[in-house]
Image (tube, rainbow, N blue to C red):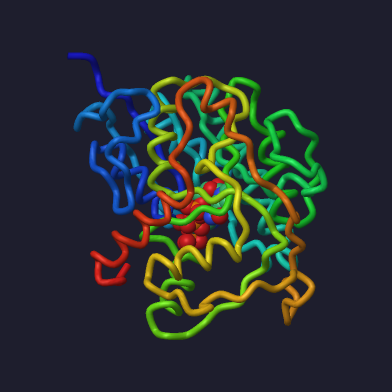
Length: 308
Ligand SMILES: NC(=O)c1ccc[n+]([C@@H]2O[C@H](COP(=O)([O-])OP(=O)(O)OC[C@H]3O[C@@H](n4cnc5c(N)ncnc54)[C@H](OP(=O)(O)O)[C@@H]3O)[C@@H](O)[C@H]2O)c1
């Protein structure tokens, strides 16, 4: 039997991290779709030997610690999920944000190369300004509108051309802190919500992203890849759909404009940053429709007593 692929995962306690650890162990995470296998192969237990590192175990902004950790672990592949993800707070914590998302990603890439590992780093739709007027493909020009987006773009540029960089968007997991839970809590408690209908994007359910990442760990393609669930939507449509799943057909969600947000968020978001997944779909397969992903997320959230 061949040796297990050794995989180091940074940011392993985050919402994508917990789902990725399940997937790499051959377990379907909550919200997961057993039939979604982009590489048409199930994942047997023992295929991957996983070293999961939380922020407590490895601060990726500490260059020396990153090099020591990679040298000691000698992974075949590193999935670098650790990130400064507080988009609004980043506007006032620019250097902290860049230290993690820019310099931290550079350290991971350098350490990977020095130790013969393949790096898979995660980036965001917020590298785009939203002015294209259509879905973004991998080689479209970037122009981030906020500090978080600029720091993730810096991280992309500091990766080597051999690395695999996955851009994803609007990530929601059963076990994550994310807007899907805020909406579902309000829907279940008889409250209503107001969401913007003028910001268009692509939802990515964390379990589906995790299954894609396992495929990329196997295949190590290198280059840029856009990964999101199929179909374009708005925040208002996401809220209305979750309300529908939970039986709220009574005007639960109200559509507002970004200019109606009070207080206005510190970070400007792109008005339209949906990601085209055609490249990934041509190489492997398209991800399930976003409604299917959210239906699974809400179903499994409920089966866990809405207690994440
Ligand atoms: N969430 C989204 O909508 C979204 C969209 C596009 C791209 N992404 C990208 O997808 C990846 C995974 O995101 P996610 O949704 O899983 O985010 P998450 O839940 O916020 O997880 C990020 C993890 O990174 C950890 N971390 C922060 N600073 C660190 C440091 N200096 N060293 C080591 N670990 C550190 C965090 O720990 P603490 O919790 O202790 O801070 C957290 O466990 C990130 O690269 C993110 O930028 C996310």
